[in-house]
Length: 428
Length: 169
Image 1 (tube, each protein chain N blue to C red):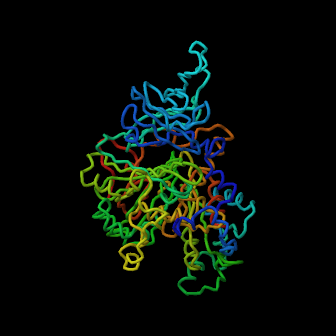
Image 2 (image 1 turned 90 degrees about the vertical axis):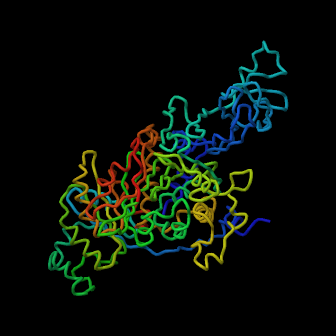
Image 3 (image 1 turned 180 degrees about the vertical axis):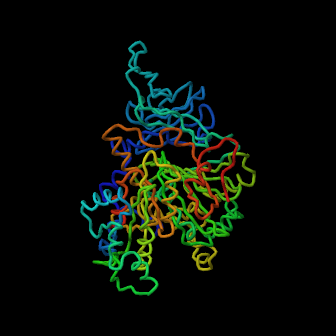
């Protein structure tokens, strides 16, 4: 249960809101690099944190992310011509460079210098790991570039996708730190999904439906550990990473690539769910990449030409009641990603948390809210930089390990939870 | 035409959600297991709560018959609660144990057994400090693990109040 005013603090991320200020402390994934594949390619509309923006790649390959609307009469620059190092509005020819600076107003004498007085709001946009990242906070607080491991490995070691999720970011993210649903909602996929099946840990997952949880604060967020019975009196631990504000990394299975998410608010009723897979030691195989492109694992198939999932609320997520009845699928919705999203979207655009009845296994969710609220308060009242901005907080890994009964995951998996160059994930 | 799911999950439809209470008050007992935790629990107890009671481990030791009496409840199958502080008042749906990493928590097994006997869900908070050694933390966790469904390890005692409120204490 969360009071309405607390929920508002966490779910509202527009300009001027405390939650929006928190998100504006970080480098956030804004676009896939492939969306701006070439110099002078068509500009792309971007809405982030309730701000309408336009992204483009200029003649010299520089990325720009600027206010979507021309300062003259409010035309969308999605219609602009991307030419000669700038976006030119097709209405009256006003032109802007990648910093948002107006560089040409054809109707005014050049010597008047009028265009120098016109500048659109702009944010930096940089490429790292196939993702274009932006920082939407004050320039003087701009943090170092992100160092998430999936974005730092060679490109052929990773695959990243994004999908539209039609609900507030928080209820989507809370699904990512709720390990206890896996044994129910996704149980069929543990043995059928090509990016999950075959791991020894899956049997432990399915063999013990009452995991015991331990949640520990980490410098950047939380480690959420689920403990299940393994063989010989030992325990199978799955340790999820949550780093503020909205990064999660799911514990790996066998030698499969490890995956995780970012949930980035588009506005208060929609978010981008970013999904990545990577292997620290080897390139992804063609079969793995094909499976990801085909919507297996944490990825989805799209409505062609969009980032909207093919199974979406407008087609009832293509729910297959016969498959559900026959236990071929626990929920009847195909694919892990849409099994999650369908339920999270069904809560409504922003779930009413005053009605919820949380239980002890929801402690990861409760602690994440606690840390987010504390960070918002510290940022608002004392100007304290929130956890997760420091790149050291980003160099973390999830892990799955088998430990002796008396061993704590904090001790037994300490090394496994940090990025180690040239060492594989700890996985079962 | 939009689908049933699209219509049902809209903001407009949210106003038709039933607004009646969907749960009744839970009873939560919060138990301090060591001396530093007693101060934490005393601070918690000073706040306003719907259904929370606050105890120290000493209460268990002081129950009629002492520690062993509590431990024997299960053996006798006697759930009358005569000797179990957790059954006082409205009983306990949830018991939250509070411990400090590295402190002696000999009472953990007595309190844990008392929780088991009454069938209460048991969770625990282990408070750490900047200088807490891993080994000390591990010892504390090992003492609590047999009895708890959820362990939370945190530096900040404020999280206990937030968790209890989230659980409708």
